Image (tube, rainbow, N blue to C red; front, side, top):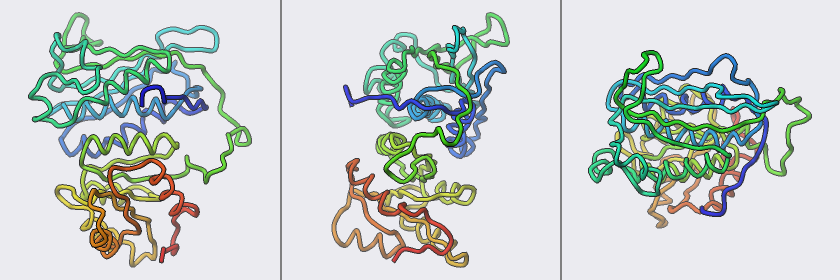
Length: 325
C-alpha cells in the first residue's frame, strides 16, 4: 500500500482504544495461559485528536506479535507522557513481553517487509513479519518513531534486564475535549463506528489484510483464529456481522455456522454470516448456504466486494427477529 496511506483524524478516548486492542487479543492470550494487561499513567490525556484506527492497528500488530511469540508469561502495554508542549503531549507507548526475544544483530532489520528474527521463526510460529514493517510506516506517518529493545530493562528494578522484547514508539498527539454529539462527523454510509464485526480467520496474513480493510472503515473488529474462538467471542459480545473463513482448525467455518444458527433459533435472532473461502465453485457456495451462511465472498478478498457485501447486510443492523431470506 505504498503511497496510499492517509490519516483520518478524530477525537477519541485513548485508554478505551488501548483497552479495546487487548480485549481483541484476550482470548488468544488466555488460550496460551498468558497474562495480558495494560496501564496508562495518570497524566495521560483522556481524549486525544488523532487517527484512532491507525493507532489501534499499530498496537494490534505489536501486541498480536507478542502473543504469537510468547510461549509463556505475559504481555503488558503501557502509555506514559514523555513531554508536553502547549496542548500537545508526546506519548510513549511500550508493548513488553516475556517471549522468544529478538537477537541484537536482527533488531535493525525486523522492520523491513518479510523479515523475521531468523529462518526458523516462520516455520515455528508462522507469518511473514509484515506487521512490523506496516507498524513502522504507520508510526512514521503519525510523526513518531518505532524501535525494539530485547532484552529490555525492567523499569521497576534499576539496571535489571528481562528476557523477551519491548517495542517502543513515541508520537505527539493533541489533547482534546470530549466531543459533543452534534460535533461528531457525519457520513454518507451507515454509521460505521457502531458496527461490530467478528472476523474468524486462521491464516495470519489473510487475517491481517481483512483487519486492515475493516479498520479502514472504522469498524470495531473482534478476531478469532478458529471456529471455537468465534463461538466464545459471540457468546460474550454483541456482533452485527460475522466474516467466517471456511477451513479452520478445531472447528471449521461450516460447523461453527451450524452451531451459531442452533443457538440463535430459540431466540429468534439472525446474525449475518459471510463465508470467506478460496473455493468459489457453485457447489462450494451451496455448501456455505446450506450450513446457514448468508453469502459467499471468494478469496483473495477485493476491498470493494467486501465493503459492498457488508453494506448489503448491515444497512439495517441485525436485531431480534430480523432474519434474512
